[in-house]
Image (cartoon, rainbow, N blue to C red; front, top):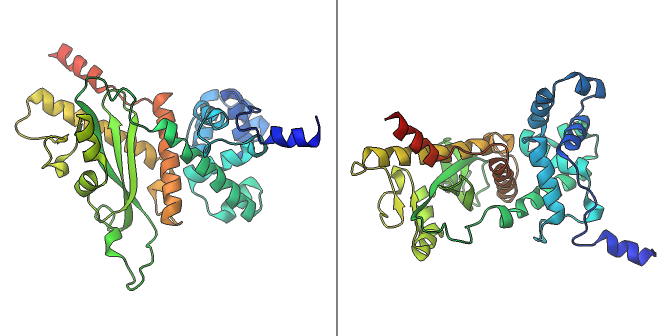
Length: 323
């Protein structure tokens, strides 16, 4: 093979050169994370998996699936070319999302130049984020014959105070949940399987959930598809697109809505297990979008594999049996 052929092969948009099993990913991740062979070998597998999750936010199985999908995806923005398939830097990006270190902490942890570490970290965060096209989408069958199809809620995250051209603070970013600057993302979780099927944001935290729902696309989507969502009491006033808990509901209907909304909060909890979203975000709002959407993609993988959200229909059947 001549040099021209080698160059073309390096940039083959669909080549597969590095598939790593979950067991291999476990060992590679722990070693890169600083664990020595002796400590790894002495521990039970469950302990090593917990160590891995504390470093990278997910199990080795989930991480191995993402690594493979970045190589096989048909989404050009997400596809990682053979020349860029460096698992150490991929894991470094996951560590950034999970632990949100400073650049000096990352330099020491991964023994990498600050500039290189920054560039490779954001490279892989953006690649994971781009998988949202395949992983977070409205189902092709439009939820079949179901009418109530998803729960909707906004989730606030704390950010560094953005600069305002005139004032020291921008009141539009004020989050009533934190009492500080924040942004809001609108998420929609499928009632049928607990998967994330809708994501819009980031919006300034001062823009409340119902305004986002009515003005930013979801209400129009539900109207066009003939479907309905379930939301909390803050979404009242749009009875043909979103149903909220109310005194007209039967006891069983009220419980169903309550379980659905609590399950939605569980997904929000999965995202907040990543330190970049649970504390103050130090980077720009654009970088927040990169991180938030990458985390949501990762959480979608978790729900699809080893951390499924509970099935609200099964819960309902169990309650009927108890009655």
